[in-house]
Amino acid sequence: MSDADYCNQLSSELEQKILEIGSDKVAAFIAEPVLASGGVLLAPEGYHAACLDVCRKHDVVYISDEVVTAFGRLGHFFASEKVFNIVPDIITCAKGITSGYVPLGAFLVSDRLLSTLAEKNPDSVFSNGFTYSGHPVACAAALKNIEIMERENILEHVRAIEPYFQQRLKELNDLPVVRDVRGVGLMACIECMDHSKNGELLADSCELARRIDRNCQSLGLLVRPIYNMCVMSPPLIINRDQIDDMVHMLRRGIELTLSELG
Ligand SMILES: Cc1ncc(COP(=O)(O)O)c(C=O)c1O
Image 1 (cartoon, helix red, strand yellow):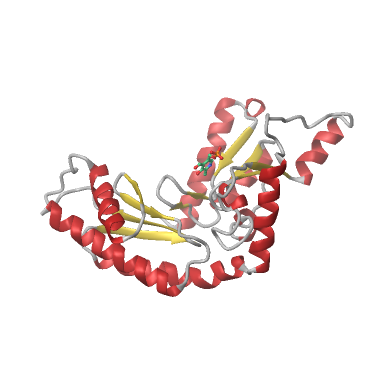
Image 2: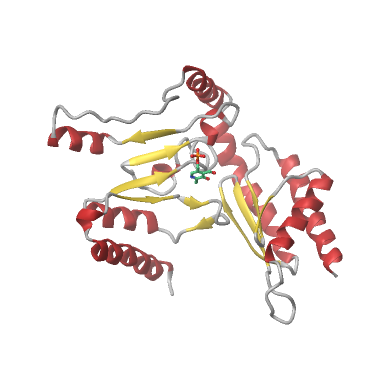
């Protein structure tokens, strides 16, 4: 199936689901631009734009979950518009907004959504509050973080280093246990076989990535093990030498794991 056909199939599945539930009962659709914890899964090109069209057609609010992808991971403050060509109604974000130094989450609401609410009722209040909403310390950390990212041209650096990061990781495809190496920006996943040579599912497919993680850790590299996948989100300031070290340690960690498993 071509990417375009796959994309059509997926967006019509969404439309069918909305129709099945009843569009007046569906408040919002939420999607990550890149499915991070699922193993850095990239949707076919045009998927997000097609889903946004379906949402617009049925008056469903489109929320882009950019908790992982915002604030530089894909080389832009927000990935939805710059990388995936969509303007969502709401964007959620966290993590990179303070580079993780202080906990902070945020959500951004589009002018389109706010003006729609105001049109329906000019006196309406967009009410949303938490105990620590707009906490001054966390917000000060976020503002300083954004200032540093701009001052040190971090987004430009991510865009410049991304091809090298992705290309070097792809070299690991030559290891027989590696099934797929994929990624975008500074996020990547090495998916390993979860089948033994005779085609049976390994007794514990989580064990493989856990062992790779353990071996990599002993060499000085942290990876995130998810089932049979190793997921990485390195610091945005990573340089070429560090990428070389990282790929070297990953290769060694995977080889050590294979020799352990016989
Ligand atoms: C894509 C995504 N969305 C949401 C969350 C949850 O974010 P929070 O803990 O800030 O609510 C996470 C947490 O890792 C995430 O990866």
